[in-house]
Image (cartoon, rainbow, N blue to C red):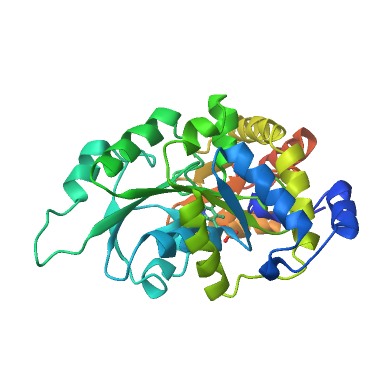
Length: 342
Ligand SMILES: *Cc1c(COP(=O)(O)O)cnc(C)c1O
């Protein structure tokens, strides 16, 4: 019984084309600014995202902390959605590294409102921290891969800008939102000052993310990346598969949304309560089926299916390039034949 890995879309292996691209990449020393492949990737990404400049970084986590470091000063207040990846899964870097104080805003599915933003910004007073940055996330991971629409990014960004804040978009899976809403990615990025996208999730590159912004911000961002130890030398070796990912793997994300939907209707008919998937993330509830989340994860482990615990009573299943329709059918077979369900 072969292992089916639904833990995350980060488990995707590079394609043959990516391996060839890595093998054949022209390289230089990127800290000296002369790695042609990194430059090609960065120029392509900047153009695609509609920003003046882009920069390759080692991970999505670095892709978030670099803009935060670039746009805030220690002691500043940063507005974040309560379930955001940056607050929950980035080891507290926003405070430990940037010295910022997070102010959490609760929302139904990542859709912070303009009113919440104006209420969270403190008036000028000798006691108060400066509020300088709003962080948004799309698709929203902990809310189950919900894809915010361009207007759900535009509204809060406009309000933040009206108050003089900058806006960073954690777009680890931004192209999943692009596919879901059938819009150009610039319909999102034009509203924000900085954006981060992951190459290593559904796009299947082995390593890396992109940070994009205006020239002035990126000049600061390059120094912050260097400070974090993210200045890399013959980086073309890993930038080359990233370029293949960005050029050729965006459209196929639709397949991952289709398999997530197939998986969700299967789990529904097996009696599971689910969060209806919009993109490639399916959240199922353990209530009424398993004692708790640990028992749920163990149940899948015994069927040789990897899943991710997701809070106290939820399990996350993420579809990706290796999860074909046939694999979905196999997963549902294993679950329904387990003897445990119904
Ligand atoms: C995965 C993810 C990140 C971090 O990316 P890493 O490459 O794992 O550091 C950031 N934000 C969101 C929303 C993510 O899903």
